[in-house]
Amino acid sequence: MSTFLTTLSQISYLFLLIGAGFAVMKLCKLPDVATTVLSKLVTTLFMPALILTNFMENFTVTRLSSAWPFALAGVIVVSLSIAFAKFVSIISAGDGYRRKIHTYCLAFSNFGFMGTAVVSTLMPDLFMSYLILCTPMWIVNYSWAVPALLIPSEKTKGFSFRNLLNPLFIAMIIGMIIGMTQLTVPSFLDISIDALSKCMSPSTMLLTGMCVAKIDIKRVLKIKSIYILTAIRLLLIPSIFLLVLLIHKFEYGVSLCVLAVLSMPLGLNSVVIPESHGQDTREASGMAIVSHLASALTIPLMFTFFELII
Image (tube, rainbow, N blue to C red; front, side):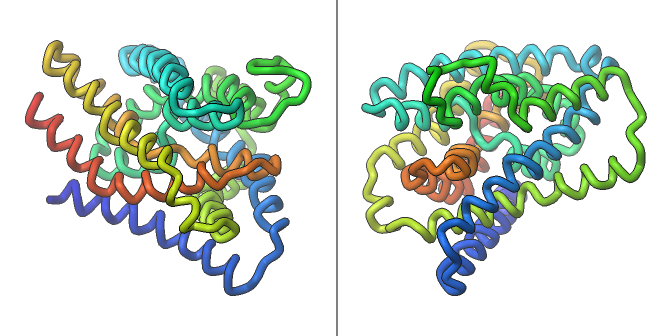
């Protein structure tokens, strides 16, 4: 019951901010350009600051050397997730843009905001290990997935070194260097980066609500792929991992962190980043809303099954 109530609290906070963004967009009749401006702030300031903070604090020799099983698990999870997502997206999507969105949503859950919130609350002793496990996902996410799948490119298809020259990837590299070398960051700069990083979550939630306010919700919720991908993300993927655990038991902490990643709803980057580039976010917004709402029930359910199996 405590797991259910804690998760419900996180979901309530999430939807309160989404609702606030929706209400502001509708009641204040903000211009459509408002979402573009906010999304630009998120992708060029708030999100890079959050990435920089995470890597400065967690990408250290000490933590990586003692938590290598978690880092290895992260590499395996992201590799298998991408392969699985590419296979499913070939069936679920017909055109190139939708296929990329489906691939991203299935390969990368909301392991950042929702994952860290749930793990830090439910499993505080494993929080730092969880961040180490997520490090390979952050690297692949911002070095390949975001540039290749979410940022449109007219001249190149898929991976391009030119696409790596973005604030997200640059922040990750700087954070890795500072974390590994333990360079001292001036206090005023550290405070500024931390303040910007704390804007990431509420800004993203508000932006999602604002994007939703611009679309015909009734029409969007009729898109069958929203429910199919939500079921795959929240039920099928974590269930496959639980079946694996029935056959072979892994270290408890590693298994629990992997399940936490796989049980999270569809990521919000598929809404925020395409919106900043003027792409169609109707389907992605629908998947974000439905999957986060449904995860209030599926996350406690998966954690309960995990405890029964282990």
